[in-house]
Length: 129
Image (cartoon, rainbow, N blue to C red):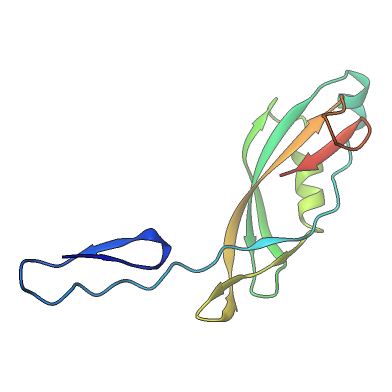
């Protein structure tokens, strides 16, 4: 027998046996609250450098970033500190497990661009997804 559980997970029971217990759904991940954009580094602006930083952010049960690290950056080191400084000021809606706020981790890409993508704020900009 096949049992479809919450979140699209499937549990299988063996011929005639009782269905396997379905694990609880995973906790909800932290979501965006207030995220002021990072400053565009002056040296990168002067050289017209664009890039992207992917941050890993540990969020406490109150929605505050407690640990911010760079997962990836391109070009390496150019935008890292600006992205980290901004992320430390962000506010999140914490992860929720069993109806209660809990700590969680989120990955946030931050784009630094000189041009104006369709529908975006005027250049230069630093934006996050």
